[in-house]
Image (tube, rainbow, N blue to C red; front, side, top):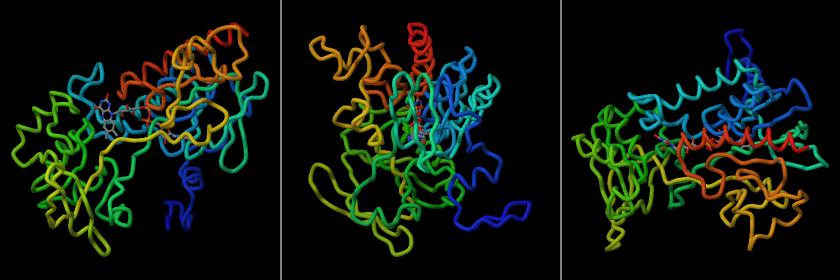
Length: 358
Ligand SMILES: Cc1cc2nc3c(=O)[nH]c(=O)nc-3n(C[C@H](O)[C@H](O)[C@H](O)COP(=O)(O)OP(=O)(O)OC[C@H]3O[C@@H](n4cnc5c(N)ncnc54)[C@H](O)[C@@H]3O)c2cc1C
């Protein structure tokens, strides 16, 4: 239940209902735009900033709140221009304000569930059946966390088992042992962050070393923190607990030997998968759900099935003309904030080229 400062009582509101009550925009101002950007992570925010600043009537639609995966990062240290690092939340907030300054409209807590191409019009449908249309679309829907998929973990999600950094949990971790699963930068950042609060942090890595999957600077930072312990060749086999996580069973990935340990916090960073089923039958996707673009769509020089234009798809263009793709959801993309922002900007340049030729 949520009670607003004005005394309005909301019982189990949907995210849209909540967003509208706290003053976030959930209804479009128009039914037709030059450009619709789907997704409010770094790639979508990049596209919105460049689209709006270059004179396109631009709307960004985001299922939750702006920031995407980057919004979960406690400290991004490798983004150009921030020598002391920047939290994902700060970066997203600045980008959102920058996009608004240039006139981009933001629709938050709205889930896009379908894309249709009617002649030159690209129509996007929301989960409540309503729709908006545009000349061009940038899909920047990123990836969502993959589930850990071990016995007992699903039922304890949010009660000791968390996906992403769950930074709000940090204060609760004082004097506790925190387990983190994952060997990539996101897991390393979380370990550095939680080491400031917890008694000890145990990083569980499936592979034989961190070097292959984590940036060198983070591996060095972790080695220098006394209460961080890295367990290589280790996986989570089971999670136990009645109302909250109580124990974890860990497995040696080489010998298969298992051991059970008391545990109250498990943070999971095992990468993500794109959620692009809603594009099935409309936009070509690869076997993992990522969206190929440009040269990635050409088979032996042949253009994708149904392609109608007398040119190859542009570098970031999908199998539907005028529908561009930026960031982590794009097949073969580099999974970094800088490249997501860069692709958002580049997609807008290609949108101009597409609009110009029409
Ligand atoms: C904890 C963590 C730390 C990281 N640290 C770093 C780092 O230090 N440096 C670095 O370079 N990279 C880092 N990364 C990776 C980086 O955050 C990603 O590469 C980047 O966020 C990708 O941006 P994106 O916009 O493509 O997708 P995302 O960030 O995944 O954003 C996609 C957005 O689209 C929305 N969306 C999805 N489907 C729909 C739909 N149907 N309708 C409406 N909205 C939708 C989602 O809600 C989400 O907000 C980190 C990632 C994580 C998880």
